[in-house]
Length: 301
Length: 317
Image (cartoon, rainbow over all chains, first blue to last red; front, side, top):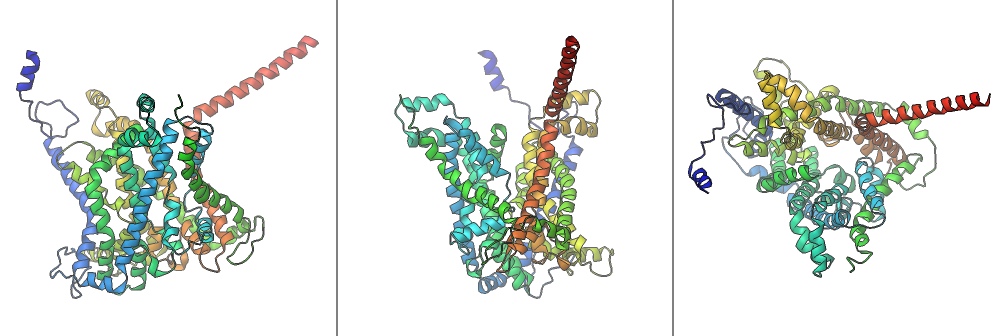
């Protein structure tokens, strides 16, 4: 008892992020090493964000300002919103963003719902032909979407969905990898808990809602985030399905803007910022759950 | 007590299975079937045997596409296997503000390939920032046309792929680095191993599994490259379409009313086989011992059989 009390009152030695003299902790860098580390981190940081910062600065520069100078002037002398206004005049960028959002949100909802249902069955229940179902999902992983591009388009066309957002959305509505991830997450739920709930009279839906859902929420956030990013960033499939510029999603719209109205790079830069900023903000807000989920996934998966 | 109705699990997996059947397995089987026909839009397809594959051998565009994709794989795999590991080591230790660096290093992964490819198009264009920089340091007199030379264009696209992929594989390694025990590092340091030695003898063996995984992922990803080359070349595939990747060729072959769907499907099939190669290599490498044992035991059984037959015959005699 006294021991715990004293250890609680004694202040732990202050943690230095670097190795001090006499410390044997070789995993910590020395002070010089730490400074070098930050120098390297800042160097990589510059490499990673420079294109984005440069693009943003370009989108704010007026027509008279040089955008290709070196060393690059990243702060525009006279910031202007004209380029953004010009984007709105040139292409229906709000429609494009709306289309991307619709496809993205739809993909998230269907993937989360159906992957959780399927993962619950595969991860916690015993049934005949379960191995066949698992084999179907695993073998699907081996088939890249690019390989089935042509016949996938024929399928969508025969469903009458060519050149529609439904055609963009449907093939990605349930991803095999998401079902398998949810299966791995559901397998971690203790069987006793589920049995206890069953004995207490909970039906399948109640078990899903009150036992499964709280247990797999970490994995759900990873599935949701990746589903959204995948749908928002996808280019090849919408490019193949959509033929009418009025139906484009943002990525195809950006390529359309860049190849058909190539006159002013400042306007194109403004367009790409419109496509970029929402997804970066979303990630910045959700990144804590994301990295936690990835760690959980790697530990469990 | 009934735990659940017998059909509940089937109902739960049914949507997923239907989706896989309609949007993955059926198109795949259809691709295989179409690869042996001369299918075009608005025309009944006819079986043509291996004609599409014969055509591939003589088609220059297919040769260019295969070369581009193979170069992509050969250059990307080592770069994207080792650079993310170094990056992961850099952000692995917990120092102040490390979360900020990890997050920003992930930005290129989050951004759409189209968006970043457009940025790169500007940076590498004839009058772009890279040319200004080279000019500034007095390295060139005339601007380098990065985007209208076959090899430079492929090089730019590879640079873009590597830049965009760094953060993704960094996270894969980060999770693995947590499992490399610090005891091993300490023991190695105690024995006088320097930092470099510890990297090769402790860290690399410790992350060998994830390293395999990363190189397979990179390999499959590189054979599937499309967006980078498409946007950087404005959809043309570079001068004369020589910087097209396999997927670009499939896309340009299959589209439109004159699309050669049969031929595009045949190329898709080749692409599929290419993506299987790295998986096979890893499968063999991982199960090398098992396979060797199986072969050895078969040999042993055979030898035993021969011996037994010999003894039986001897006994008869």
